[in-house]
Image (cartoon, rainbow, N blue to C red; front, side, top):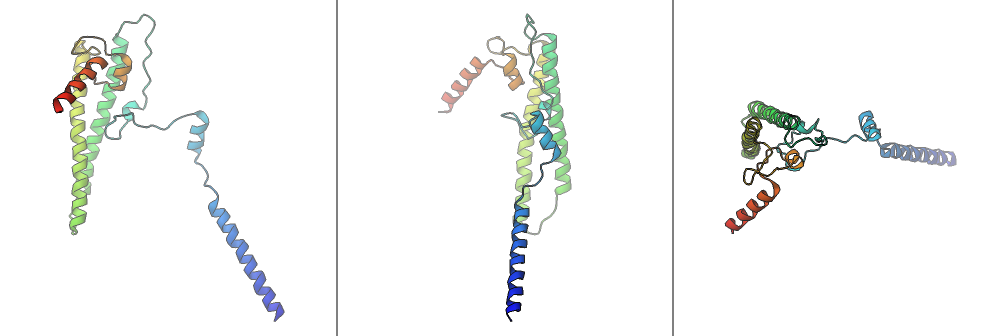
Length: 195
């Protein structure tokens, strides 16, 4: 009988240690993917959308490098205009791809749910997506207007006072039509008229 108790005790002890080993194994952190390790080692960062990015598509910023004007280079030189043309065209291309994806998504995902709650959820998702695309449609119009201003030679100059908008401001908002001072005054006037 004593031998039976001893064997039960040793079985319990071995199952406890096996359980503890399984817990340790489960608690062990997963191996980091090679790409993440390489990115951390090289200092690479993930692509995050800039403030104010619409949609989630940031492909127009994927290969973006800030423009560094040469010493004595005139404002809105042909090289600068080409830099902004490339930014605007890449942005437009990304938005157009997003529109195509939305059309295909809405065609593929249309199902007639028997449950009214499921139908309402699907309609709300479609409504939100269409609202986003409408905002992007307006942005596409602004991009086209900016491309027209590049062709006419007016790009980079404030439409209110004629002052240079600035390279950094245009890189942050390539469709900007006003210098920072005029835009600030415009926003103040807009707030006052709303009150």
